[in-house]
Image (tube, rainbow, N blue to C red; front, side, top):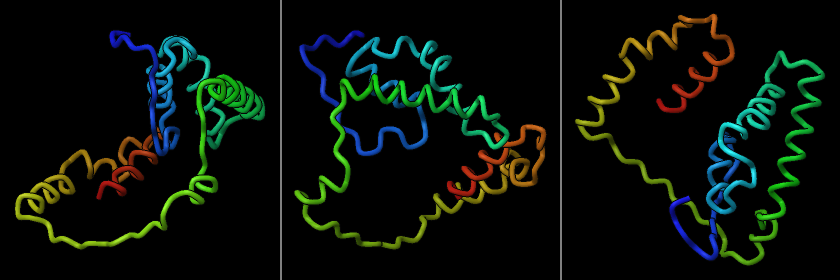
Length: 147
C-alpha cells in the first residue's frame, strides 16, 4: 500500500451492510494482507458466503458459507473493535431526526424523467433478461430504491 503510516485507524458506521468486497477494502487499508489479495478474498470468502445465501443453495453451500463467515469473523475480530448501538447509546445524546421535503428542481425532474423512461430501466422492470434469475430481481429492487 502506498500510504506509509505507523498506525491506521478507520471509523465506519455500517461496514458490512451489503458488500463484502467493500468490507475487504476497509480491512485491507487497516491491516494489509490479513485477508490475502482481493482475488483471494473473493474466492475464499465472498463467493462462498454469497452462494450460501442464494435461495437455491444446497445444505452443503449453507454449511460452507457459515464456516467461512465464522472464519472471517474470527480473523477480523483480531484487528477490529466493534461497538454496537446498545453500548454507544449510553454515551451519545438522543437522536433527533427532522424530515425536510424539498421539491425537485427543473433539472432534477428532467433527469429523473429521462432515467425512468430509459430503455435500460424499462427492460429491467419489464422482466426482460429474466434468465438471469435472482440477479435480475436484485437489479429491479435496486432500481426501485433509486426511484
